[in-house]
Length: 300
Ligand code: CP
Ligand code: NVA
Image (tube, rainbow, N blue to C red; front, side, top):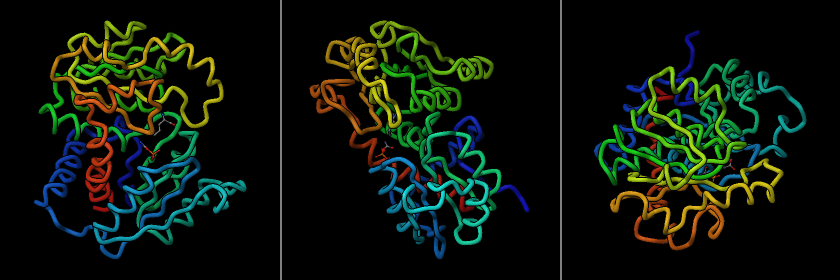
């Protein structure tokens, strides 16, 4: 049995393959590609955490590619009662052609992938959110041209989405400046990986410095799913709010991105997210198109 084409993280797929997926996604979006690589195929989606975009965009993408989906949540599956991810993988492989999972521990995803005979797609863990980044790079390039050598500033929590931005900066060769409190920095292991790969990734506690002349400013919620210490996080992250003053530090052509869901008045002001520089609705739409590229690649 050959290893299935898993989509687990951007650091685990070659840059050329990621580019191929984005090109396919863009071709589907433009109507240049109309194939049905999912015809007669099923995608199972396992959600241990809530979702609006990932849930709907994967279902629509799969159906538009000719396939269908089966959705399981924690309460509705035996995973929630302790069936192992390995056994779940073995069983799923007998029914469906690919599995997408949203879970907390990245180790669950790895266990699923290690025992699955069909492709496994990471729909978010506490460590990363690679599908989001494929849509984000598609959006950045639609608005600003090739990602290579662009300057992206992250201002906020060094969370799962920030981690995937670090992977993306290395794979798509752009400069990423992460501004976050010392205690919420991305993992050292990840930053060391980026440095070893020759990535242009830096970390600072100064959001104003990170945003200077940036092409894109990006942030995310201050309290991710599973985070308990909301009040402490709000206090720590207040200086990293993306407001009009921070946007003014960036290039006049700069865009604002956010994976959503957003809390207006916390990580971003309403003026920015609802303003002319915001690309968030295209970004959300591009989940659908980028995931068609991912699905087509995984399903071969
Ligand atoms: N951005 C994102 O993944 O949104 P959902 O949690 O709604 O899927
Ligand atoms: N960082 C957020 C992303 C939601 C799509 C979370 O994990 O809750």
